Length: 332
Image (cartoon, rainbow, N blue to C red):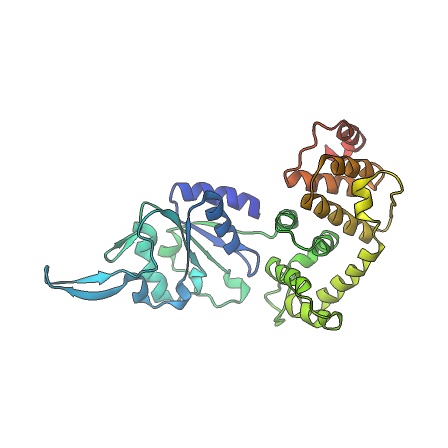
């Protein structure tokens, strides 16, 4: 299931306090999705890494109660006491079997020892698949049966929507649009330490903003996404020098340039969308629509659809009606 659908589905299940488990390869954004749901609902979020815990950490420490003359359990401070939120058990299947077993009661009965999870809190867990060669333990059937399971798929369209909203460098967005297979190059059979994932492309974004000198850029980006992808990306970055002036396209309809090279068109498409989303106004939108009328059709449609996915409305524009009539055959 792609990220957009997962956000909608898991969000609904959180409302009903149904325990869910999100499976997926490393670096594809499983944790980010769960945090996004909590942020959108404006509720609490606690991230527990059971792989770092001992079996007694969840149940707490026993102590002698002099009034009842019995042993009670002092629950850990990291568990929620009130309010509402998501208790996120990340990398659950990386925890030792004894630790997973200690989570049984918390997940199914919403309590462990003397502790009871507040009614407003939901449990969501996540983990890498056994085939991903991470540090994982086979999840016992009784524990697996306590969850509704989903497997997250990598979607370029979903990633591009997130990248625009997150203000990622337009050169990265353009490159992935041009060479989508490089969004995710993880191979469980490979011994490579660096490979491209949505998470590592976010690292590349930070590298580009860090001011690393040009002569060190290849080695630095290679450390995030691998040498082959880094070489390809840096070669693509040189394409940006061939772009028509984006500000001219946004501000006027005269003296604009058009290009035919596919790689340049991908870069131009991402550049136009990013520039508009940073400073949106009606005149710029009209100028973009006017410009796309003379572009190669697939790129004209890409630009408009990317704007619409990011919440830009244009149905009231007379120019958009002309645009729709021209490209209707691609929109069916």
